[in-house]
Each structure stands twice: as structure tokens, then as C-alpha cells.
Length: 152
Image (cartoon, rainbow, N blue to C red):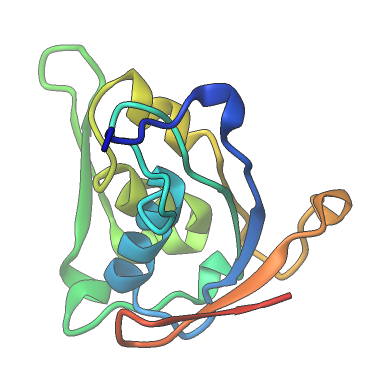
């Protein structure tokens, strides 16, 4: 018996629509990362991008637990001496709510060109509307456990 290996041209991609309203940030990000990598499919191959597209709406209504809403911060460096910049979660969610989910999912993907390719299939929007109706996305609802429910 031979081991199956997916080929890039044989991968069929579907579009999924996720509503982030009331979801916990980390749990939501891990489930989105699983879909982007394709680990939910039987033809998953670690070195091939077998994942699907994910559209996330209502990013501004995502929840965090504990004191993270006040204490969590995002750190970046400008590249200049003394250029360390820190942005608090409450400021990030107020100004750029889509970046909160993008950064959480990016941290759960591989740190190479394959991970960058998988991240490009993530589309995040702050409000309830998105411009991807032509792709006919299927709605997926995540519960607090690892189970998912897909609706056509």
C-alpha cells in the first residue's frame, strides 16, 4: 500500500464563512488555522497547501478571556534604534480589529513560504458584510469544544 500525497493541482478549495461575534479569540484562531492548513481534510499533506479559504466577519466583536482586554499587547520593531513599539489590545481592537484575528492565526501557521501562502487565504472584515458573495461561502459555526458544524 502506498502513502497518498496530494498534488497542488488536485486540491479542491471551498470558501467558509465564520462569524466571530461572541467567539473566544484563541479558540477561534486555532480552528481557522486548521482549515487554512487543510488538516480537516483526509487528503492533508504537510508540504502542500491543501487548505480552504476562510472569510471572518464581525472581527470587532471577538472576545478575550480574563484581563487580556486590558493587559494584552502587540509588540513590533520599526528597524531603527529604540524603535520598539507596543500597541495595547483595546487600541488594536478599536482601530484595526481585523489585525487581531490575523495576528492570532499567523502565530498558528508555519513560519515559511507555505505558511504565508496559507495566510493569504484568510479574509477578515470588521463588520458583518464582505465582498465575497460570488464565491458562495458555506457558513461554519464553531462551538466552544473542538466540534464544528457546517451548514450549506
